[in-house]
Length: 595
Image 1 (cartoon, rainbow, N blue to C red):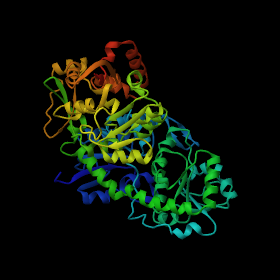
Image 2: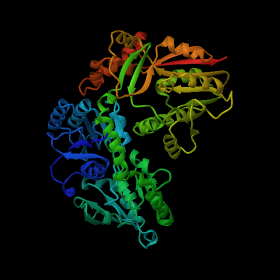
Image 3: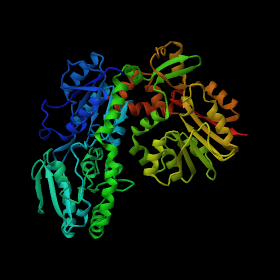
Image 4: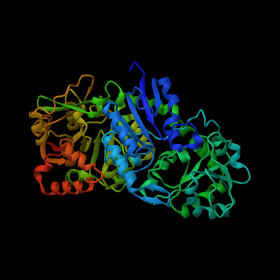
């Protein structure tokens, strides 16, 4: 865009005093605005009358916020609902103070249904949000290195007397109680930085939290402590900022296994996750005995947190705002569909390697990987178990985040993956160094003929505007005789076919780019057979998406805070009983054999 993009932010309160507002407001809004301005993004705060290309609601979801969001929508201004906490799962009040009440869940679900996009502080929240919305993006909390510009002195890690620091709202200091005896046993002093002095039995140094002094106060310890409950979905949705701001100044962290903490503390390690009292005891004893470990963690932390700088992530915000609120935004967001010949064509953004890199970064990774680590194949259990060889080599061509490669290997299959997006592959390797996933072009694989016994392609071949033939030819080449290919594409199912004939898909794609095709079963079967395969089986999957995408009322009921659960149970029951409804699945898979 040549003209500046105009963003209106709606936050609680009209002041700019960081010391008198929820930290998430300045973390997820106020500190980002100065970095957006040089990028051509002009921001306004709490002015519903201001000209705007997009508006963002931060920590606002009550009735007044919903009415305001609705007025912005009436002006054709896209609404972004930003979440720093998981308000999609009801927990009640934890410790009698914080958590997600039924009213909060109602408010969040209602805002999610109205919003054009949802932004989240963690992948855990994003996974929950993805159940309610199709446009969900993870923007992790950022660290403003213009303010948090101090660095831990490496000499401190060998000084006499180890010091630990905890920072947070005082009501959550109770999480420290189980590890206070461990600190006492190892002669580790404790500093608490908080809004007010918490009620704890053990002695500690108390520092009132102030934005101006927080960078300096962080350095009063050699360790950041971040124990947190992990038995409820509210705490599991927590962002990484509580430890990230310490890591950014070179103070390593010992923390509970909250998903966002795991993301920043992983390889190379810049701290340690502790699941129970014994692991806390073991880890604290280890760092007390071997101080060099903390110095190594500190160096890794300083390097790792560069990717979480406010300046860097402001670039991602700008790209996102251009997509949502720019000249292409409204149509791109809707994934415009148009009937062209025998196919349904989706227009949105071009599926380039950069597109997939961004797409997979916003995926609900914790949900994907937790299922994969348990060997859960989800909707693909039946075709995989029926057709994939137990003793042969399997390749997934276009493996995305690698979750099916991981799940198959955990089930005993010899599976590997190839993914176009090199950045995605790097992140997979950082998390699972031994998982055989590599970057490559799946239309030109660097392997000899007849290399594999099975080939898997899930929603890949439809993204080539000139047609899927190069994918299919390459699959045939690398398979051994008798090998099988399991290839799925979006399905032009019976309901979509009827809507197509009635010209439901007749939008104007001007300004948009080709994204993918949906194929009829006869055409897709012809393409697979023309490539040289014998089709031996057909599977349909993801009928819920296949139906809700075509029936607006069903979509609204599924995501209704009042009717969603009942509608989901009834729909899934109907799908179990009705083969006709299953034929309206979003995806169709053909199993082809190389003869």
